[in-house]
Length: 375
Image (cartoon, rainbow, N blue to C red; front, side, top):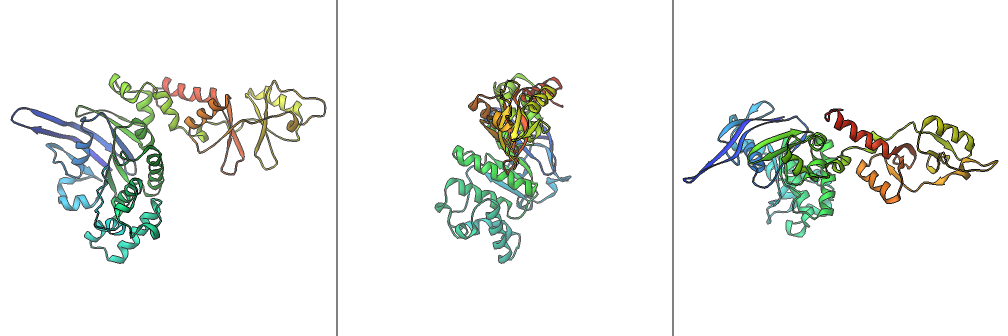
């Protein structure tokens, strides 16, 4: 757990006094990512750097797991905190393995243990140890270097990590991939992380909480959904963007929004039964599945069929489906692409497990607006 209590940094010159961080109070629970977000010069990086004393606070204090960091010698403190920056900062004259082993060796780990840790971390960051351990930074792409930077920060298994726009210099495609890999890693490691960004989409994707800064002050700290649904002031509403409702779609998984008890019938079922089930349920469509449980087609109240028809004959092919692991932003995009109001939701094996209707999505978003974001 990281706790900041009235953390302040004032720079004084003969001409003027600049308040870079103004009495920042915030708490990041163990195992969560808090993204510090705001325009350039708002104090987010200064606040981050005060945690490991790269910048010395003028006032207030930092507690890590209840311990005041001023009671910890500076070198010892920094070795206990993983630090990742946009510029990566790998040592060019060291191999990848040597870069990752820097802090473990400083902590007195034996060479074999440090090398095992380096190989393990490369695997965790989706880099093949056999391929990359002996390479030098100049032999890596920018995205690969950034992954090594993350591995180095994790080398001594620090409970806390500070990340200052760590993926900002990576191209959009590789950036998204590295973000995804890091989130998978976080699911396993449960580090407590302060993460500086200026990108609201990145903050929504990466953060358990978002802390919005302006002119050295912390203006709002809340879950991404509450920041988007209920910005505390006009500045925050403007900063997160007019499309903040669309951004919220990325926070909800299909599995959490679909209707799992939507009507389903097999290929050989009677279409008359299908019509009766549609009338009773009020569903937009009824899915017809194969013997393996995979979506074959659908029927609506307007579907026509002749005597002796089966649901297999009477159904219309399904234009699109969506994985239960996808988010609603993906689902809505698929609806628009295929000009449909609902989707079949499928598991990893492609089996139909539920239905997602546009009206359900509208209801979910509207309910949180009405309930003050706490529904």
